[in-house]
Each structure stands twice: as C-alpha cells, then as structure tokens.
Length: 284
Image: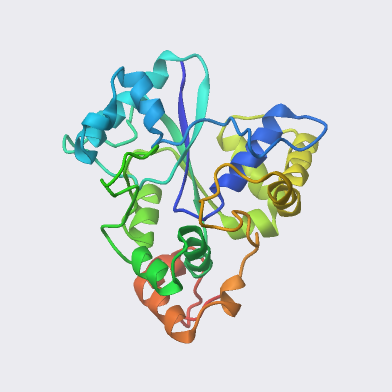
C-alpha cells in the first residue's frame, strides 16, 4: 500500500533544495542529478495530477469546488504500491466537510521546512518580481494564496497560503499529523545531521556515505551552475535566477529598519518559538 509524505513549506524556504537532495540520494549516481528532471513527485497543486485521478477537466470547476475534491485525489495514492514524496505550498487547511485538504488517510507524514521570515521576504519578492513591501504585506495577509486569479487557466490550482505565521502553525500544530520540522538554517549550518534526520523520517536510506554525497551533489554552487548553464524549468518567467543566494542572514543587507520591524511585529511570536528572535526581541 502506498501513501504520501508531504514536503511542505511556505514558498522560498528550501523545498526545491530538499527535493534535489532527495533525488540525488535515491539515484545514488556518480554525478549530480539534472535539476530539470526532478522526479520526487508532482506538487500537490498540479492540475494535471488532479485531472488524471478525477478523470475529467477541472477547468470547469471553481477553486472551492476543486478544494472539495482534492482529498479524494490524494487518497487515491493508497492504491499505489509506491510511496510518494510530494511538494506542497498550501497551508494545512480543512475542506468545507471538515476534512484535511491533504487527506488524512492518504498522508503518511509531513516534513515541514521553516525559514527565517526575514530571509523569506527578499526571496519571495524576487520570486514574484515584486517590491519588498509588497512581499512583506502578502506574508502578513491571512487571505493570501498562490494561483488565485481566475483570469486565465493555470497549470496549478489555487493554494491558500494564509499569513507566514498561520502557514507555519497550520502544519506544525496540526492535530494527529505525523510531522518532522527542520529549519532551513540548520540545513546550511549542520547539513549532515539535518539531512540524516530527514531521510530517517521519510524512510529512505540513511547510509552516511550516500547522504554526504547527496549533500555535495545538491550544494548551492552545483545547482546554481546548472541553472546558469541550462536554465531551470521551475523559474518564474520574470525572475532572472531561481537559485539566487542560498544562504541565511542576507536580510541584514536588504531590509530597512522599518521592514524588519514590520516582519517582527507580524510574526514575532513564531520567530521566537523557532529560534529566530532572542529573549530581548532582537533577531538572532
């Protein structure tokens, strides 16, 4: 019997890096995998995935109608012998019927990646080709969503993000959910321990040599070189590069005092909980 492990995160928090690592780990090849051929599983909002399972064109449905059907799509994974590792940016929300959007039955667990919102903001702005102030406003909005426009049919269906804080809490405090939380910063600072914890949670090979090689093959310098040479299929059209910096604390050179204060005001409680704010209320 199959099922799904969700690779969950707010946008621009390290999800793609994790997927590249997992692909390198599973293939265990002699050279890095092609970043344009990631096969860890479709994103949860992939319209083609939903249409294939449902057996009809979801273009005839509105976003709320699609949300009501999404749990059934993910339950279908139980018919498969393989376990899926699927990216998701949706917040962990409930349907109108009170059922988790991701389906309680079809979900084996969720790995949630959290990143300092002070660093998320510049990266989110770059990703959306927006101003920093616009990105910060979206991160503080309880009604924010991806693919939310009805002006044209998109390859992905609507994804309710909620605010950054609400997104985090929706997953990490979800009742009866098998969840492992990792910090983007720990992926950088202590990669061996962090990625080892990750693969053990996901039930993947935890051989130290294999893990170390997968870490090297998914290093930022490796993937950014690939993108500059061959492009990256997941890069937004208006963004110059998807893999922009690959570090933490870049916010110190990019955010104004007012912008820093706004993010802390909106998300200070969750930042403190996960070690991004000290007892004095200042960024760590």
